[in-house]
Image 1 (cartoon, rainbow, N blue to C red):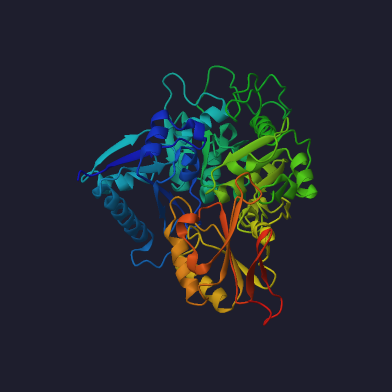
Image 2: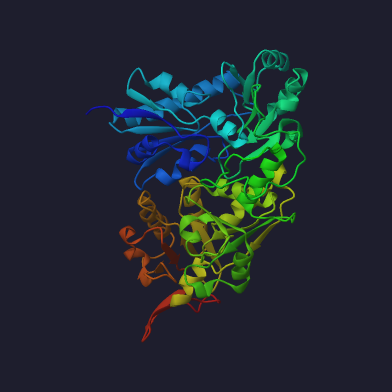
Length: 542
């Protein structure tokens, strides 16, 4: 068997439409897609690549053991990181040795301040490797600023914000143009170096360039507490012409001729305007004409499928929203309204969706985050609230509007299988270990409660249903009633009642919800079909 090939895929700065044609093709063709994240699990690279992924691909999530935290590793920070890279390279080598093609994702360019280079050094001597370059954040930030970064024979110096302040100051004094990366916690020192070198008045700050959360500010006006790692400071070189962006004018709104939306972003202003004005124009395009009002995030539940199950309260909130954020399938269930922006994304980027919604609201937008069923049941409410606890979103109001749950919808089709105590358990082990799933299944089964099983299977997760059945059969007899509800409220709805012993994992997919009965659950036949109930008193059930 021939070995596989490693591709270092540059994704560009954030906008999925800035992924090159070649990169998009290779991501879709790869057997394995690998990406990094910090311990919170939110991968920016995977979020950018999501539109180009396909069903059936193996995903390797490489989680850094430490970023800015302290570590008790005997080798300190560097020892922990070196060990991580060795282990990550070994994981990818296993796939390559088996003949699989591996696409290792890298935000920006793979060899420009990227983690890809660490994998390349450890794997390229054993396996074929090729690099697909990507647009760097420097280019994206310069485009966002709308000002030439360098002209003619000018020199551009790219600097890490992690440099000591005195060294950074000296470098800034001796270059015509500069891009300072790796900001975040380093920004107070970067600001000091800009001031000490006399460059602060000419410096600009660009946050998350090209993404829907992009911000452009004068470097002197940035709040140190709000600076993420994915931000950059630019000091354009001297220009013989009037800059496109200048701080010498009052902060007045651009007229409608000054900007034009291109791919969800902002074209360069056609007249001179201060950085604050560019920021205001971007906020208007991203979050609507806010009119100075306070934005908010409303997390809504559409119900399981039938539009009749969407509450009037949710319908009103959807009508009032300037922006909709959600998984593509759920966004598509909401009728389009003139002027309302729709931000659809992949179903595995909950935290990124939440952060985008909160950032839009922070700028004044009324954002509805859309979930199926009830948003508080294995859906977006928890993700939004978790991200909203971050300091930069402390002033953004968040409301949650309930919806009819899939469990209750399926239960209603057969009667009242959830008529007594019951538990809801997600069978997905994507966000929690399978051992935890087993512990919870065993505990609930031993407590003799009915169970509503969410997320039982997908195209890539097939064995868990059989494993669940075996765990439950250790506590429940094979005759225990089981309800299989698929696409309830949708056009392909089907509901069946079987027994636990008859449960066939091949009949279950991601659109199926299972209800496992308790000892007091009874199934009986009627002229309308099988009916199921769980008695509210012990001793009256089957």
